[in-house]
Image (tube, rainbow, N blue to C red; front, side, top):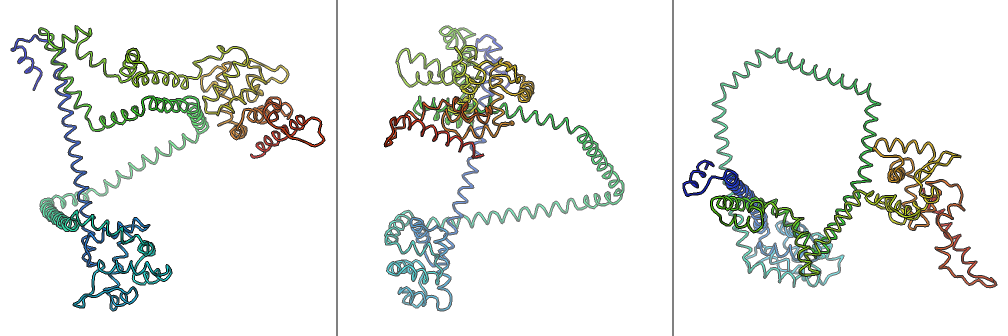
Length: 596
């Protein structure tokens, strides 16, 4: 239906013409129509999946039907036997294979009589015919339960039973469990289901045969119809073969020449290409380490916090939204809703109605109100605040509060410089800022604190510090060669070399991807702030003095305070304890340095 027809119809009823509302009205109809088509396609797909599942289920039951024919047993017995074997450690396929092997053995000359003599069971009926596995196996299981394991294994293997099946049958609870399962399946009509499945699969195969016949007949008709055309095409290829060959060679020559020219260009420009690749990889590593990894970690922390604050409802709502989007239900809902609100707005333009009423109450049109309600975050935050005012400590308000706090933390992780270096009071505050930045880049807090202690010792937290004697510079007092590497790093990433964050980022890069990966690996092996400071001094800063490394680690206040040793003849046990504690910690740190 065109918009002009709808327009003429509504005007004839006394409505005024409103192009905007009419457009929304027809748009709603179109959206609803598209949603219905999507739902129809989803239902078709579901029906196809169900059909495939039914065919597979029937095929499995038909296999049991054929096995029951071969073993002279009911399908219910075979299924019950396989299920019971599963409960005692054997697989269903293994158990059914054992039944088939036993039946095969008994069909051989003298096999039935040998089974009867081995397991003391009756294997022939009154008419002298061999009994089926269904009548024999329970007796075999009962007899084997009184035999030694090695004898039962030998006898069972001789008649085709697998070892796991034998061990399952020897369990005293096997026959009791079998009776329970067998009774349950027989009451459900399992034998009839297997027979029906056989009939279904037979009909399905007959249908396949008819389709093959139809395809053969169609193919034969096409061959007769196209026979003359194929002869003409063959003759054309024969008449123009040389021209075709020449054109193929020309095309191949063009591609080969182009590839050779491209290869030559790559060889000439390889240094430049290599440089571009290295810079790109450097940018990717930096972006992942500095921005993406902390941001993704923050998103996960936010989600877990929201999930905890809402008692699991954040996860449930997320899964519900995913299901609605996947099944196309959202379009089916919003299409008619937009259509309804477009009609209400159209009626409001004619002389009032629900759309005009909503506009007069809320100050917006009905469709505008719908647009305002779409963002889920606005709903969560606004309702959370409102409910918190009316009903303190309710779950919805906690959701809004947690979402706000989580987003703030996420933004701080994505942009660690949101709290500035200059905002921290004194050298200790700036040292704590460096530790915060290192932690945001993935270092555990103890290791970040230890490395920050070294920056305090090196520069007293002055990013502009320069040692006039040797030219060492920055928070970590890098040598001139390392400072040059830092300048290259800052230029590639468009950073200011005097920015404390840039210097911390380069320290992180050096220990993870650059020339100080040994120091980074050793730092990662530490488990305390003192050990991290010691390793950072010896490996990253290379102070070259155990005494200076010990000073930075703050020795004398961590291990020794908790050590008390009573030494006979010593005037001061505390002094002895301090010496022993100092030696133990020094030995531990040197052992860490010796691991690489």
